[in-house]
Structures are given as C-alpha cells and as structure tokens.
Length: 283
Image (cartoon, rainbow, N blue to C red; front, top):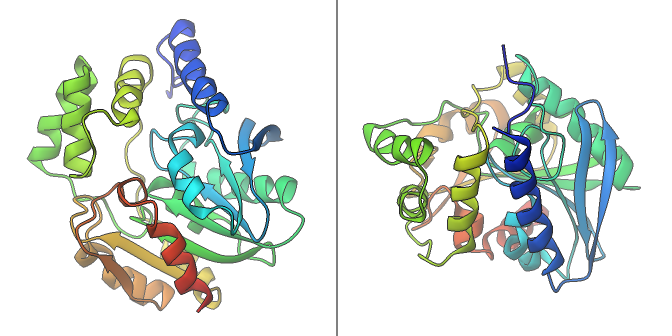
C-alpha cells in the first residue's frame, strides 16, 4: 500500500515546505502564489509575468521553488505558471496518486489550467512533468506542448552507475552525495548550486518516486494534431535522443531536438533552452 504521505515525518514536511517558501520569498521577480483545490488535493502554483501563458510542470523531486531561474528565462515574454505536483516534494498535497498515476495527473493538469488560465496556454513539461503533459486531455485550452527530457515516451535508461550514485544518496544523504547524483544527471551543476541543498533535503525527508512507465500509444497519439516540440540533451543518461526518437516520430509525428552537451537537467543547465524550444513551437 502506498504511504499516505511522501514525507517521512511531520517535521520533515515542515523542513521541505519552509525551504520552498524561503526560496519563493527571496525571488526578486514579481509573483504571487495561489492554492487550488483539485482532485489530487491542494495544489500550489506560482504565477509571474504577463503575456502568452506557459504552464510549467517540473520533474520528479522538483517544484516551483527549484525552477526560478528557469522561469526567469521565460520572462518577460510570457506569463509563467509553475505548478507543484501533488505527491512530489513542495507546497502541494503530499499524497501520491494511486496505481493510475499518470491518468490522475493528466486530469489534474486540466483542472489546474481551468483555474489559472482564461485562454489557451502552452504546457511545458520536464521529465515527469512532460509525461503529465502528455497524459492531459488535448483541447482548446492547450495550444501546444514543449517536452524536455520527457518521461512517458519510453522507459528510462537505468544503469549500474545510476545505482552507484542513487543508493548512497537515498540511504544517508550528504551534500557530497547529492552533488554526485546531480553530476550524473547534469555535468554542468556547480558544487554551490542550490539544487545540492534541495536534493539533500529531499532525500532526508521524503520518499522519492520512480520514473513512470511509458504512456499507452493511443494516449500519446491524441496530440498528433497539436504543435509539439520534443527535446533532450545529447548527454541525457535517462532519455537520450536515441531512446525517444522512435516513439516521438511514431506517436507524435515529430523529430527529437538533440541539444549538444546538455544532460537530463537541461532546463537548469541552460535556462535559455526553454525559450528556444518555445520559439520552435511557434515557428
């Protein structure tokens, strides 16, 4: 049976939420937070900027407070709405969806859009967030998808090297072990990057989730008539171009943009990535 909460203790939940609030409070970009009621419980979104709307969905173990540099790169040309996924560390409900996780997340994404956007929005998903975007229902409220290092198209590539950096991080997290994991995910992460502190906090106080299974082909094919950009880094060890090229072409009718030198944390490694992909979507 899945745990009722992803956190290992009430104190741990407070530690994670306090970190998120401190980061968001220190964000110099004008923004506001909203709490939405959804089928997956309370959902916190951070909203900043004006212009064409972008709903930004983070990956596993990430949240709005970890995406501020990414959001700033999309401003001032867009209104950016960053949603903390329920069942992931952050400010949303701590209960993880049940066995039909992606279907539940897809419904949730539509509910979020219905409450925060009066018009169409581009949904930008990273990793797990991309799978959530693909699981949503196509319709007039979604004008396009940008999928970066996307889960949902294929199984993640798992290696002994991944276990070598993940197990020590999970069993006894330290800054050094978090850094080793981040280096595996992204070779450009600095030792003093705020993600090191965050990942240490996550390992100590929450139960991480596994990468989702690929979505059924008919679910993905629903997006064939919608503008979609799929991109991944050439150094992505989970979803390299060779792993997702075939399903992207077969199910979405699009080629994968292979970004030289970037790893799985591409939007964090180079915040200019997502604006460039949005430009491709509209070209």
